[in-house]
Image 1 (tube, helix red, strand yellow):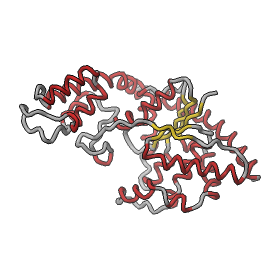
Image 2 (cartoon, rainbow, N blue to C red):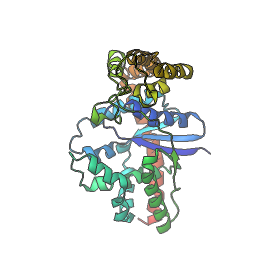
Image 3 (cartoon, rainbow, N blue to C red):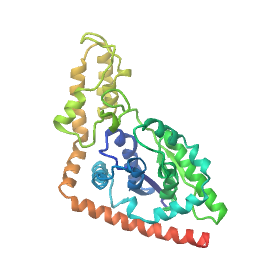
Length: 328
C-alpha cells in the first residue's frame, strides 16, 4: 500500500527558484517514485493568516501557483492537486482540534515568534495567526497523511501535528495515523543580492522568468566580494553564481569553472553569461509547459476541480469517523 504524502504552499505571489529547488523538485520525486500517494494543496486559508487585509489577488495567485506546479512536473494523474478552501471539512476539523489543543503548545511555536519579529509591518496579533498550526494539523491528518516533506526549520510544525493527532487518539479513539516528517535536503540558494531568496526582498529569480528578464537578473548577481579585477583569482566557495552553476551546469563544467575561477582563468561577466545559458537550457521545458498552461487556463481549472473532488471524498470520510469518535 502506498504511503500517503501531504504538503501545501501558501499562494502569496510568484514562486521562485528557491521554491523549486527547496520543495517542488522533492514533490515531483515523491510523485514519480511509485511508492507514494501524493496530496498537494494550495493553502489559501493559510495565506490569510498574514495577508488577511489584502485578499484581492488570492485567487489569481492560487491559479498561477498551480500553473507553476504543473510546469515543473506535477502530474494530476499521479498526484491530487487541490485548493484548501474548496474542502470545507478542513475548517470543521480545525474547529474541533482547536477545542483540544492546549494554548501553550501554540505559544511556544518558534515559527510564531520568528514571523512576528520579521513581519513587523503587519498586525499578526490575531487568533488566526496564533492558531494556524492547528489548521495545519487539520490539513495533514484529515487525509490521514503518513509523511510530510519538510526542511529542518519546519520540524516544529510537524511535531505539533503529531502531538495533536496523539491527543485526539488518546481522548477519543484511534482515528489518525501519526505523520512522520520526511526531511529533505534543501540546497543553499540565495537571491541575486546574496541574501535569502524572498519575494519581500525583491531579489528573486522566478520560475516564470525567461529571456531578457532572466538574463538581467543573472547579470546582477553578487559574486566573490573580494574579487575586484578580472585578473584577480576568485573563491567560488563564497560566490553565489557558482552555487547556481552547481545546480544548473554539468559536473565536469562546474569543476572546470571552479579551477578557472581560482586561477583567474574566467571572469565574473563570462561566468554569469555561461550560467544564463545553462539556466535557460535547464528551464526551457518548464517554460514551454508553463506557456502552454497559460494558453489553456480552462484545463488548469478543470485539473483543480478534479483534485478538489478527489480530496473531498477522502476528507468527508475522515470527518464521519471524527464525528463518530467524538459522539457529535
